[in-house]
Amino acid sequence: MEFPERFSNLPEYTWPRMRALLDPHTPGGEVVNLTIGEPNHAFPDFLARKIDERVASFGDYPNNYGTPELLGAIAGWIQRRYGVAMAEDQIMALNGTREGLFSAAIALSPETKNGARTRILLPNPFYPVYMIAALSAGADPLYMAATADTGHLPDLDALDAETLDRTTIFYLCSPSNPQGAVASREYWKRLLDLAEQHDFIIFSDECYSEIWRDTPPIGGLEMVQEFGPDPERVFIFHSLSKRSNLPGFRSGFVAGGKKGMAEIRQLRAYAGAPLPGPLQHASISVWEDEAHVDASRERYRDKFDIADRILGSVPGYASPPAGFFLWLPVADGADAALKVWRETGVRVLPGAYLARDVDGVNPGTGYIRVALVADEPELERGLTELRDCIYT
Ligand SMILES: Cc1ncc(COP(=O)(O)O)c(C=O)c1O
Picture 1: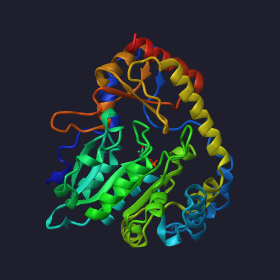
Picture 2 (picture 1 turned 135 degrees about the horizontal axis):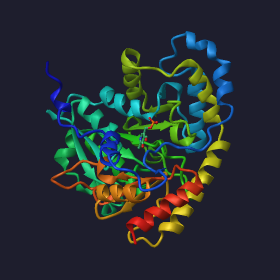
Picture 3 (picture 1 turned 90 degrees about the vertical axis):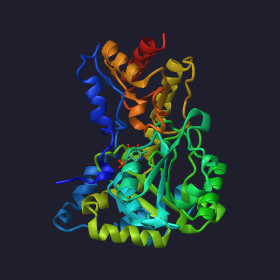
């Protein structure tokens, strides 16, 4: 029995790899976990009541694409947030963005393009589902270094015409995980121009869009409205996981051009796992409520202030405009994560575990990722111990 060759030389997934590095060692103090991007702030208190209102519909197969009421609530949110009108058939409910970022590539990336094997472009470092989606769609992933030198986003001018002519999908993550970089209007304009010239699609992963410090990040649909490319060029992915502190609830959406959405919906009809009815119903109220999102954002602002105060004098420290991660420069991320774990009990993620080696270089090697998810006093203690252990 053989297994698919395209998955045969994958690196171990981020979390088992991190556990293998840290868990054989005893933590040097009380544990502060700053690894996983799992928000700990309060989710809306009406959630259980809303699920309960429709609990009977656990007895029915759920609506595949999202109920009209849910799609209407999401359309309302897109209109309020981005000023863009979307019809119901331009939106589909997801079990969080991850499954959509995966399945949409399978639905939309053709087998060949211009007579050649296709390429799917992704940032490096990156959220791992982009890579597995590209491989599953039968495309060659191209890992584009997103470093301090390129503003922590892929350098669009580094792409040659031959690559672009084979490209079917470009994954853009803005605000980015892990660096918290936000694509500017100019960046979007350049990307949309390339997409038009070379006929590819942009998958805009916007799951951190609501966690920002001064200015709400630009979204892909706004840019389509402003610059007027083919409306099939951009698909946005959002979720309640980070916005509403509901990573275990599994609720999100994809929205974009009608033709592409018809393909994505059809794949869901054949193979997808739709969001359970009571969760679809409860999601409506969550998308309609901004008070809990504002409160959570305020807390992240305070956490970034704590981080700036404690780490501000670290050479190369950059306070990101959005997201809830610090991407801290160190000599070697795995060495630093191990040292801080063994000496203090603070748990952080080596940056290389979020990136791939390209030509022997891993753009995450000289970093650790720190998630600002712990409560403020714990975070304060964790960051202080981290600083004293690594940077003094
Ligand atoms: C960049 C990015 N995209 C997508 C996801 C998936 O989130 P979810 O499936 O919970 O919406 C995550 C989760 O950590 C992420 O960091």
